[in-house]
Amino acid sequence: MTKNNYILIIDDSSVNRAFIDSVIRKTGYPTMHATDGLDALDKCVNIRDTGDSIALCIVDINMPRLDGLEFIRQFRKMNQPAPIVVLTGEDDETAIQGNKLLDASVLMCKPFSISELLFQVNNLLGL
Ligand SMILES: [Mg+2]
Image 1 (cartoon, protein in one colour):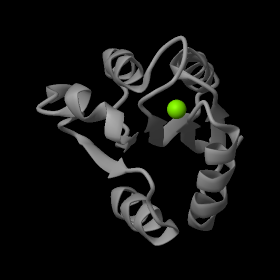
Image 2: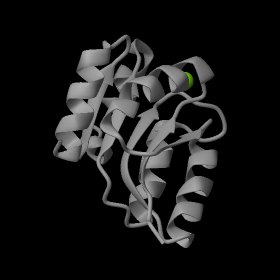
Image 3: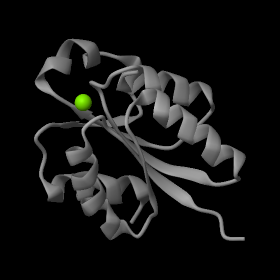
């Protein structure tokens, strides 16, 4: 059976998820969507339990229930090594400044262009 290597798109805005999906579809990787950090952790557990893997996460910071920073903390605790693209807004500056948790992540300030996002994703996936 073929194993899937997913790009996980985590954002509480369905418009943002659809936009990001339309861009990264060009990579050929299968995508999975999550509406907040908790939903994303559930999906990570499912992916792991089915023997699939996560190639990359694209995660919004500001989300209900569990925000992007807490998701990243929990994700790393699961020993998930996948690179992370963090989508930040102006209001997130204090939370992200000097945050060691984000050392291995690429930060992208909203609004970002299609070409910027695709460049970062391709780069992280080694495409
Ligand atoms: Mg949001």
